[in-house]
Image (cartoon, rainbow over all chains, first blue to last red; front, side):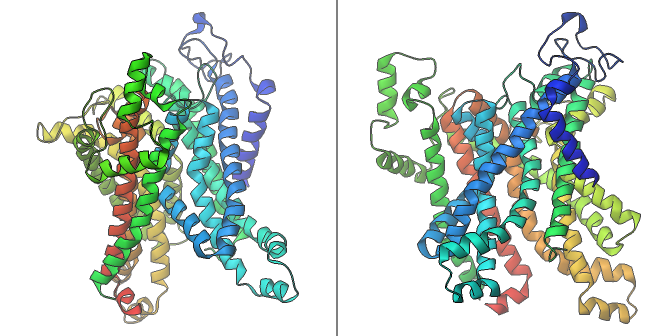
Length: 261
Length: 317
């Protein structure tokens, strides 16, 4: 419940950043360099006098995009591929599975960093990289679910009533594939937020001066002793959102997958 | 099934995976926007230099042929050379890998020291504050951004308290004490994440085992509860955890990218990041290939260990 509220608040803040943020997130003020939290700047200011709270609020937008777009890409591609792999079997299944095995063998962050490096640093490319890196997990899950559903009695019944394979796949298999994909989406969104922050931290995601939680942490590293608030709040925010998404994923699993636990 | 048969079957199954990994890694170069020769030339825009690069890297050949040439070199252990330093990529990787292996070993030790006992306690005392605290610990370990945890630990232990160095690395053969001091904080950072995974798996496996008939029999025979949990149950619960440990070790080797960056540890992950910023594509490809190879190899080792410690598997196939 609380996790859902945190995720809901995160989405509202990210979407309504322009209304919620008290200051312009990129406006510099050299009279306010590295000022500690105060009643005017609740979370302090950064190395060029920008309001940390406003940058956090606008940074939520980059994180939300990084959570939603790659997961949507991965789910959108994995459903037809998983259905095809689970349904067609034979060499099609073999080819798709070998591809996912190989992609799973390359660690998630390494794929994302390598792709972002070759595609060029930008938030868009970071999202593509995260989407591609998360894809094999979803394809495997979609295929496994499709295979499991295929042998259910109600599919046999639909088949004996003369339903075509395409109709059965879309009308009966697809709706039952969605719950596990939804659970995985919540957990992967959490991983995607950390991945975006990691890429931006390395300079491969959101480009300055546009705010992102990862790039804020990168800048904060140089002023740890003088301005610890610059590092504290972006990290805490990532931590809270990721915990909320993980708890939400676990909660969805308890509700949607009674066999688990 | 005998062990040699099991090992050979699993080894054969690895070949297509590794082949596809090589194709995917080769294709990375095709993602470079525009002409790869121009991108590889970097600042150099002299047409003669670009043409030389095109010829040198066989970029004027059809793609399948380029892959064949690249693969042939790989099989001879030739990963190409760094554009920046002109050092062979294989040499760079073999010099950096031991640093990351030491970091991974220390992180795994911390992960096991936290994850196993906490997982056992959470399973043995469900519904108690201990189980609640264990769940919170696991969730935090899994959710905390490691690079931020690293920064916070530097702030506390290096900047504020001055107990440990903020960054840098001293090889163990130079000064073991300083080596351990430099490796401690990064190991804690990486170890906490793996501890969360270990704790969750140990708890799950222990819960299953604690409900088994032989545990009930042991309890009926008045075997002390501590002995039932730590000796009888844990022994069997460890079987799936061993496989997981091998896989997680593989992840640690490659997951150290940001941690090495923050603590300025000259390991495998830092090699990748430096390769990315220097646009040293041969280095990036080499690191991707080796990390995937290591991951596949460690999963293979995990499968073999699982086979060795699980007698039921030997009889069932």
